[in-house]
Structures are given as C-alpha cells and as structure tokens.
Length: 169
Image 1 (tube, rainbow, N blue to C red):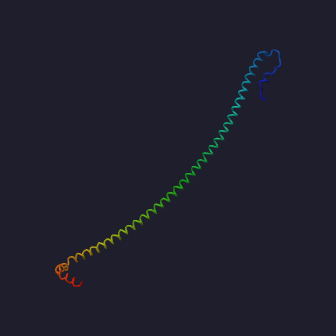
Image 2: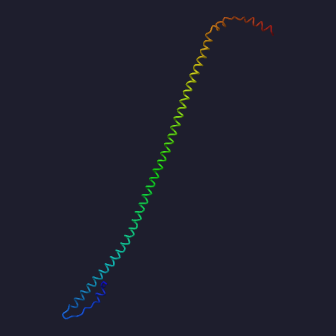
Image 3: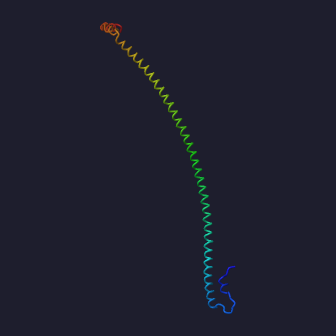
C-alpha cells in the first residue's frame, strides 16, 4: 500500500548515537510530505481527466461506430435507389421505344393509305378529264355540224303563222 502524506508526517525514527540532525530530518520530511501531497493531487486530477477522457473516447467511439453504420446504410440505400432508378429508366426507355415504334408504324400506315388515295384520285381525275374532254369534243362536233347551217336556211312566213293562230281562236 502506498504511503500517504500523513504516514510521512507521523513517521518516527528511533534515536541512535550520533544519528541525523532531527530538525533537518523533520524539515526534509515536511518537504517530502508537501511534494507528495502535490503529486497525489496531480495524480487524482490526472486520473479524473483520464477517466473523463476515457468516457469521451468511449462516447466518440460509439458515435463513430454509429456514423460508420449510418454511412454504410446510406451507401446501401443510395445503391438501392441507383439500381431502382436504372430499372425505372430502362422501363421508361422500353416504353418510349414501343410508343415510338407504334407511332412510326401508324405514320407509315397512314402514309401508305394517303399514297393509295392519291393514286386513286389521280386515276379518277384522269377518267374525269377524259370524259370531260370527250363531252366537250362531242359538243364541238355538234356545233361544227352542217345542221346549224340548214337551220339558218329555213324561212318561215310570220304572217302566215299569225293567221293560223287568229283563225283557231
């Protein structure tokens, strides 16, 4: 068991023949006692600081472990979000490609239908033009016939027609 300042203070030495000077020994023991008290106080203070520091280190170690675990959880969550985002992006791209294919196919079908309609309209306009041309040519032929000249050659006596209509009344 370590000495205390009180042990040092209460220590008594036996007296011998030509022993040490008692005052010097007591003065030296007093100095040792004071220094020892100071050292013990510093030791207690250091032990307290050590205890406090150990508790703080333990607390910070606990926080560090918690933070480490939190970082790992956050990294895993971020990775999961990234994976889900990639899956969702792939699904969106596939859906967009399907829609694009559908739109392109519809546009091609519509373009084909319009092209067929245009061809049909061309045929119909050609038929109409030919018929109209034939009609106009037939009318021109009628106008150019000699029948018109014969009609102009007929002379009708208007007085005879007036007499016929008066007698019939």
